[in-house]
Each structure stands twice: as C-alpha cells, then as structure tokens.
Amino acid sequence: MPRTIRVFEHEQLKIHPNERGEKLEEHELRKLYEFNDQHENKHFTGIRDGVKFTSYVGVIQIAGLTLEILPKADKHIYDAEDYKAASTRWRNVLLQMLAITRHIPVETVSEASLAKRHHSILDLYFELFLDEVQKLLHRGLIKKYRSTSGNLQVLKGRLDFNRNVQQNLIHRERFYTEYQVYDQDHLLNQILLRSLVILDRITTSPFIKDRLARTLIDFPEVKDLHVQRHHFDRITENRKTVPYREALKIARMIILNYSPDVKGGNEDMLAIIFDMNVLWQEYILLQLKKSVPEGVTVYKGSKPFWEAQPIEPDIVIETSEGFHILDTKWKVLDQAKPSAADLKQMFAYNLYWNCKDSVLLYPKTEFSPPNTSGLYHQGMAESHRCTLVFTSVLDESGYLSKNCAEELVNHLKLKSMH
Image (tube, rainbow, N blue to C red; front, side, top):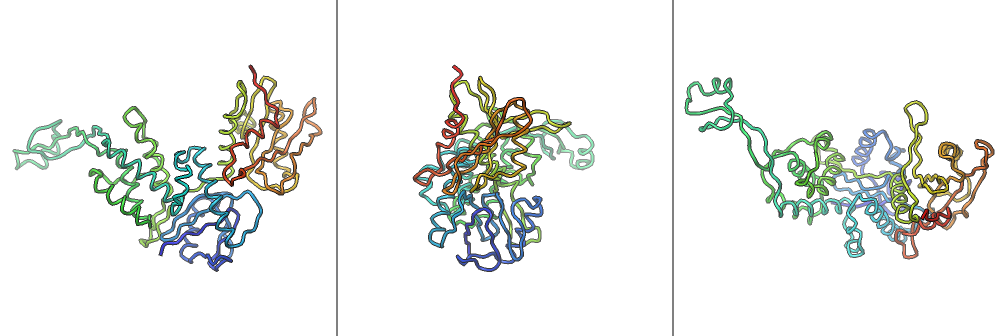
C-alpha cells in the first residue's frame, strides 16, 4: 500500500517506529544505502538500523514509499499534530523556493495550486511533465530527417551494393537502399517516451496512471532509447525545439535520477534532491538582484586563487564605493560564534576583493542573536571586518519571506550609483 513519510533535514529515520509511528522497511533501507553509495554518501548518513539526513532536501520514491525531506530553519521539537502543520508549512516554503530559483514553474506555487495538496512533490513534477507533453502532442510533435536502410521493392535513396548482393541475389525485384525519412522518431521524442515509461514504472498515483495511459495512447511510435547523460548533451536548441524546453528539463531530472531495480524486483527508485545550501544561495542571489538600487550589480564571484583553483564567494555586490562579499549559510546559529573555517574564508574574500565588511548570512529564528560585527586584526592596511547577518525565512503568514534581501540591502546601506 502506498505511503508517504515526511521528515525534516538532519532528522533520523529507522526500521523501528519513531514517535509518530513512521518507519522504514528493511528493503527500503537497503535501497537508500545503495543510492547513497552511488552518490558519495552525501545525501544522508548511514546509522545503526537507519539513516540520518543532511542538508539535502527533496523527494525519494522507492516502490510504494514516498519520502519527502523538508527544510527547517528553526530548532523546535514538534509533537505529532504540530509536526503535520509544520511539515506542510515548510513543504510550501520549499516549493516556493524551487519556483523562484526556476526549478519548477512559478505558477505551480500559487495559493490555488498549493491548496491542491499534491500527494507528493514528486507527483507535482509528474503532473507538470504530463502537462508539457500533452501540450506538445496537441500542437504536434516536431519531425526531423533521419537516415535508415531497408530492403524495398522500389529504388529509393542510395543503393547499398554489398548488402543488395547479399540479400537480393535471387530477389532481383528488390533493392537494399539507404534513404532519408522525415518523421517523429528522433532524440527529443525518444527522451520524452523514455520519461513516460519510467513514470509508468514508478508512480503509485491512480490519477497520474490514468493520465499517463491516455498520453501513451496518443504518443507516436518511436524507439524506446536507453537514454543517458550524453544524449542530453547532444541536444541543440533552435526555434523549433523551444516548446520542448520545460518538458526536457523535467525529463532530464526523471531519467538521470532514476535507479531501476537491477535484480528484477519492484523496488525501482527515483530521487529528486536539492542541496539546501545551494538553493538558499540561489534564492538570496535572485532576491538581491531584484532589490538592490539602480547601478549596483550583483553576481557570483570568482578569481584565480592557487594554481588552477579559483576562489569563489557566493555573492559579490559591486557599488561605486567598492565591493561587499556575501556568503550564505543554511544553518541555524543561536549564538554569535561562526566556525573558524567560515571566518578564515571571509578573511580571504576581504583580501581578494579589497572588501572592508564581508557578510555571513544565516536564516533567522527566534533564538538568533542580533546582527554582530567583528574586526580582523591583520591582513589589510585599514581595518576590515566580517558581519553576521540574520534574515527571516518566513513571513508573518508562514510563507517564504520576500523581504529577506531588503533587510540585507538596508544593513549594507546600499545607494544608487545614479
């Protein structure tokens, strides 16, 4: 029977029931271990009889289990009822952040869409994919020329002399030729079909199963290609392929994150996972670009550091008066004590960009200290510092805050260059 478990990052899940009665089956735990081994053990940590999640969030589906791993920028310990409300709130925050950073279409996180309460985040991606494929079918899948060969009763294309001699020594009325065909059997449509086939194997939603069956009936006959990463690298976008853009983006996520059960069982796995550190950085970068005054530029920084290794702060803010360097940290800091490694990192950024005040940006909780600034004692002719800034993730309504960048702009006292 299909079931969904929601956990927060850094929580544990074992084969023994937790306080909410949720647990992994032994075969599911084995599949998670296999998945983690294939990805350098970065998505979670293996513990006795279970796993401990890290800062990676998203959704994993193993046969009938859908496991949602959600972000959480507070230190509350919720009881069963509060946990359900909190997980819904942080699930919506994750969806909103994915939309703003363009990992899903923005319209999917409207209030009406959030109210639909999709069975899982994975189902949301599946529905988006089916929407895009059905749009393409409605307007007509594009056709391309491809080379093929065959034994025909008419001479068409170029005669393959050697094959013709081998196969038609007796049947003189036939011709083995190589010729061009203009049809829908090409890489773009083969990728879409492969995604639909994976969807059929992995989804447990009756609604999606029904939509999928109708979509496959309408889909033309194309080769079921074993699509790999290099196939996506071969795609070149042009005017005719622009309508495929969103469908191919989701197809890439589905195909490259799919782990079939090679032992022939029914434990196929699909995982769509995001590093919250990267997602938080992307979100702040985009919000800052919309919030800074005219003439101030915001971008991802990079300079040569040692040999071929660059030094790359998360965000560089360039003004007429100089630079501000910003590094985002997705972790709860309940006292003004950043790690020594983070402070050394910001020290190097100050030197390389001649920055007088770099910023470590953390999510704000009710336990966060006030913004705190500290001086470095050496390194530059003038004094330079690193400031800890705490910005709100949630607004008063419990939605993703849209004012976090404005708080930062006010702190840095950024002014228009015009």
